Length: 441
Picture 1 (cartoon, helix red, strand yellow):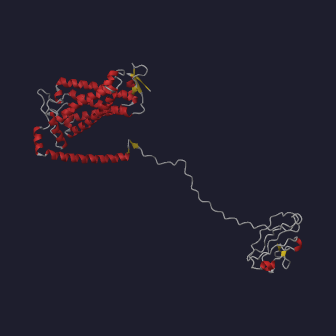
Picture 2 (cartoon, rainbow, N blue to C red):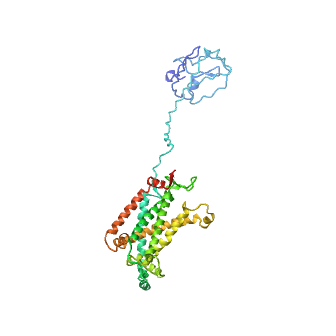
Picture 3 (cartoon, rainbow, N blue to C red):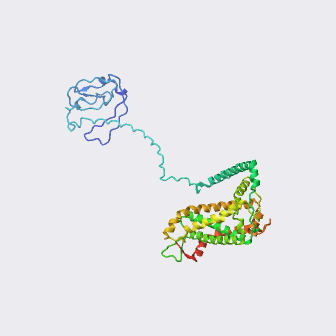
């Protein structure tokens, strides 16, 4: 038997006739005993129950034989090489009931509690994304492009125009340098002679008519674009004679149509004075030679070797054709298509509406407006590039000089046009429109 002092003792179990009041103390770790020690240190009780180490040094193995009833002999168990010193007592089926041997049978030692597993640190959880992540502020667009894109597109466009213009100028000069084109320029210098009795110079009424025409056409273009693009009209206008809201139009459309009427009246006066004073001969072609001369003048413009300007006496053939198309073709088309789309057109004229559908008027009216815009841009550009002081004196001061009078009259006319452009707002238009009808929502 192994010396009791050399082997760690198991935890003492208190025997009592009553239930333990406290949980038994967990046994201290026990070192494994060598092979064969189990047979030397423990003896079978009754051939079935194994006895353990003595409870006191030098004593008998525990428990005492008298404390355990004899059990049926069982087959011997082969010793295990590394079995624990203390093993749980497993009562046989033939053992007496716990009530009969409660005093003699000690409570089984409690199993040592399993060591607590170290706490596993929780994995860091990413913070939940907010319900709606604020996005970067959208870049403001002006039409299809942003401001920076418009600037870039403008620079590229200007460079492209300059490059294309340079190519056109060089090609035109090369073309006019050919022998047969030199003969063409001699035969058709770019202008045709006026009929006999044609007036010389420009009268004062023509200059004032020119100003009124520019004043009205600029506001007509502005109001026409507003009519096409407005989504929430500021106010509506209804004529006095209308019943049940018939003839109700937006305030901008009323302004546009009112300007059309004034422009039409001014145009009629202009045409009447043209034929009354003979000035029509300066803007109406009187010979078919005007066509090749217009081609010659156009080529000279493209080559930047422009034809001689003498507008006080005679326009070149390209000017004649352009003025004729503007006065006698574009202006009547604008008036006729405008009337068809206005409230002045009879609504119940079925046969007339079938002959002149409104879709045709809309398809023509807007391109005519674009023609007037292009005409104004080219006309003003050539006025400044072909002798600005003299040309402005012709148009505004009715004199053939190089003084500054015509220039300052032109500047004053621009101030009036700009003021009218700024003043043409609903706050000012509503009282004027109210004098001819009812203005409201």
